[in-house]
Image 1 (cartoon, rainbow, N blue to C red):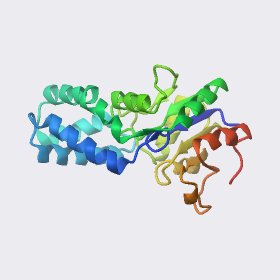
Image 2: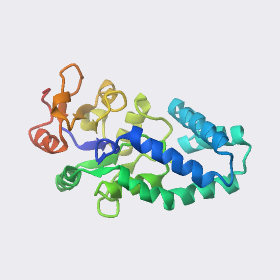
Image 3: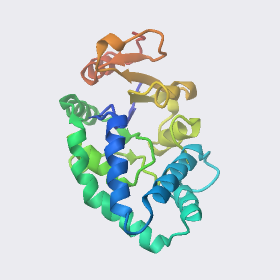
Length: 240
């Protein structure tokens, strides 16, 4: 029986084309940091350090520690200057990027339903961002952590791996105090989210464009967020 949901954020709870959003995000953050670091150096170090987080295998530090180690080795900048500036970006300019995203009313219905049923909830986003940036995107999605209790939010401060590393999914299940087979990973990414099935979790592939649905993608269930509620109410066991 499913007792916990791992809810992806971008493309799942929040309609967010990361290619489009990413262009404006990178432009905005480089501009914000331009007075402290050459934009080309900043972007090169940012991308390289982000890749280092992707490669984190759980044996080193948290993702933010991996990020900082790589970033400051590449830039030779002062962390005492750079980190407050990055935090300021997420508290100010980042807040205005919501115009490149769209709210799905079904996300709120899903979270309300899950909490009413006593399910444990993890915001199982890719842990490449600070908590502040994730809380902001939850507000954009209409499922703010100020309104709803989440048992875990996978920010880069607390995680040591990224999706689809098996340890990521096992870490989340352990944090929820559940076995992996009591959890269901809900997400739109075939590459990042659905590999949760390989560690024993059930999986639900979020597809808003129903013409994209194919049985060539291995998932226990698939469809919209509203259909997910129906699927869970009927056991969450069907392969459709």
